[in-house]
Amino acid sequence: MSEARGETGALRAEHDELARKLATRRSIDHVRRGAWAAFLLVITGGVAGKLAWDRWASTHPRAFKGPPVLVHLALAAALVCLALAASAFVRARRLMRQEDRDFERLRALRRELGLES
Image (tube, rainbow, N blue to C red; front, side):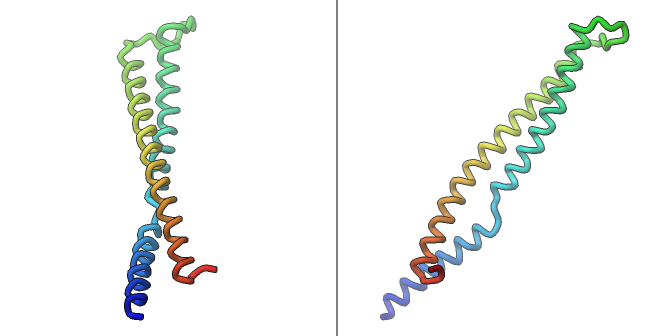
């Protein structure tokens, strides 16, 4: 009887630890960071495209004809944003997979402990 109680106590401790761990979804923070980086990627990519168009393709007399270093800086900023967004989304997906596994284990523990029908 005490062995079954000890096993139930261990299962309950594992349940409580998983519930505490799953209370906050860290993957959502990484999705948010990725979304901001993707937004900045659109902005910086658009600026780089516009500067490149004005520098090399526009025939308008008042178009920007400054040094191409500005185009390169804007393009570098866009590439940094791309790397940050990709990194954040990959990390978020990895965390989501772990959270899904933990959640399934939590549900199995709840069924085993009789907390869920």
